[in-house]
Image (cartoon, rainbow, N blue to C red; front, side, top):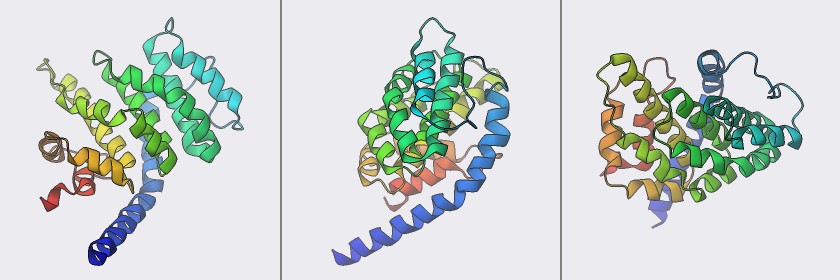
Length: 230
């Protein structure tokens, strides 16, 4: 028992250090690649991330996120900004973001959303949960694990390669978000390990081309869950 406990503690510490080491590379990846493609340089009615963090910003962004009269992409951009504020603003900002994350969970369950919109929502969750155990636990309570895993079941009807690649990118981001949620989180690992088809999906996704990413996060998730020991 003590040997198993020692192994687990050592394994958890290694995984934690692994993600800490990725911090700068991931931040650069988001700023250089993701924001350039998916976030407009100027967005009306949405405050700048570089401004001083306070609750009013989350209130304004939350109103945009929940406003069903707005275009879905604009709402998704607000969700992304909420995630960024949580990522860069510390525990207090993460707490403010929690009030609006349920809406993101609701939107992600709409499988008809465009890939670009889904990715913005996934980025929001990734930022909110990154190295934040409290947010990771809340994400689990909001049922994000089954929501995210269902993304892997989605099959693209199109035979156009660009469309196929767009939907594949959504699955890549789902892998990343689950990796973030699973880091040092035993309850998430257990829930994921009990999902029958997940091992198969991760094996398929790990074999895809992850060039442009700092890591193959299907493979990372596969090892975090412990599928390699089966």
